[in-house]
Amino acid sequence: MNIQQRSIKIGLFFLALLVLSGIFLCFNGHDAIALATKKKAGILTAEQVKVSFNSVGGNLAQEAVQEAQEVKKGDVLLVLDSTDVDLNIEKLQAQIGQLEAQIKSGNGSINVGFAKTDTEEIQTLRQVDQQEAAVNASVATYENAKLDYDRKVTLEKQGAIARSTLDAARMTIQVAAADVAQQRNLLAKLRGGAGSGDTLPTITNERRTLENQKNDVAALEQQKKYLEVQLKEAKIQKERLILRAPEDAKVLKILAKQGEMVSANTPVILLESKRDYYDIYISENQAANLQEGGTITGTTVATDKKVPGIIRLITKAPGFADLKNSREKGQSDLSSFQVRIYTEPQENLLTGMTIEVSDDQFTKR
Image 1 (cartoon, one colour):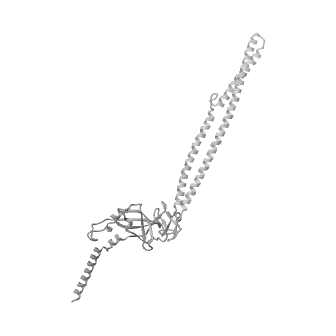
Image 2 (spheres, rainbow, N blue to C red):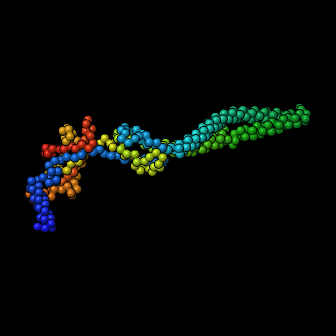
Image 3 (cartoon, rainbow, N blue to C red):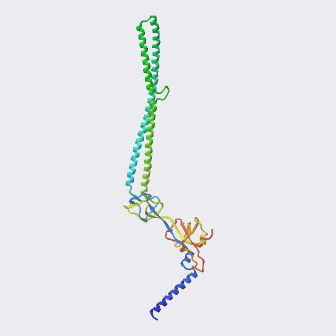
């Protein structure tokens, strides 16, 4: 027997052995898929969280944590340089302070103006009253002078008085008439064209001017509100320069190093959350007895400890996990379903542990 024939026989022997082993496994249900359907087990896994700076970027100024460090919700993780934002905040605060001073000054001027106008109105009304009295007095003087003149005209006709006396009386009435006209002119000036009892036009115009100044102050107040909104945005932006832990977690990896430029919304740190889950694959008959939101209890393989959990997801598994009819005894194809189960934190339950679910957990409930 030559070497070639011997090699062929050895090859045929191993091929026959492989075929017989496959047939044995198929008929006895010990292939990998069959074992998977008998043992429903999954690896306990923690959700990972990629954290990034929200809508801001810049130079990474500080690394406040290290890899493998446990952090609490709100703890500072990374800090970006805030020089530009700080300067912008100072500028906005200065502008707001300047506007506040202008608004205060404008309101003060308006208040003083109204007080002054009120005083002027009172004084002017008093002067009007005094001038009306002066007009009445001058009119009375004129009327008396006219009566005296009329009497002296009669007496002069009778020859009782001299002509010069009548001339003096005529001069007196003329002076009294001129005084009445002068006093009435002064009263008209004080009233500014207003009639008796009307509002003085000069005072009204001054008040209208002061009301217009209120509009100017209102415009300054609107500018101040706009700057205050910008200041709030700048402070929010500064707060976003400090990256904080969104939840209790463990730092797995820091993706950006101090001194590097960081882009907005780009993951810079990887966290391992406290939300643990494991996946199992079951048949469609078993899946029919479960529902999302329901409870299920598994057992750790290492410590034989009961692990209650909540079914978060039941979904059709990928095609490779389906049970084929070639598996055993010509059984028709069966769809497999993926079940994701979230567990509650408990002592000595570590990520990476294998958790197995017994068949009694899939009975109808």
